[in-house]
Image (cartoon, rainbow, N blue to C red; front, side, top):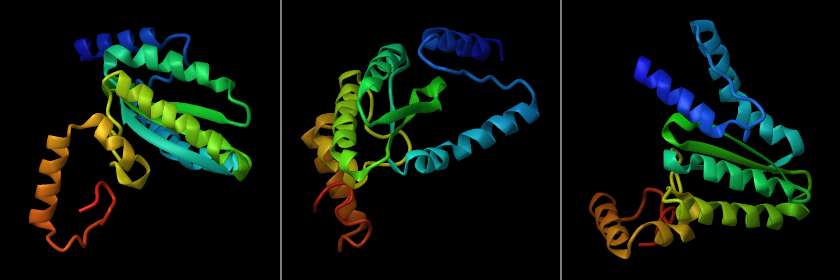
Length: 173
């Protein structure tokens, strides 16, 4: 555990000053409490202002500090409140963009757009856990080559020749 502990401490030091709060669990009960809090964060964000856009992405560990600072600088957007949490040890981050009135949806979507471009500029991925889906579909060619997308389409056709499973969710066939 010594090596892992050193890595955790290094990540915490990297992000020091960029977060309001960092939580470390050292006992089984503290771990359960922390996971309970984590599992309720997204729902809490949804109810906070009434409207929310969520993203999950992965950032190379060497770019976490740069991304966190960039994200912190975005907090000055009027009408939006945003939060960042996740699994810093593997670069898997969850972003919540919250707003209180649907008329601010375009402003939230613009922040999401800039967020995804920043992630890609740092060598990150559009999705760490939840897939591409309709929201990130148009960004896939910015992350993956045409050749790679063509291979994925061929695999999809081989296993789903009638395009019944999630049609149009990642790419059109």
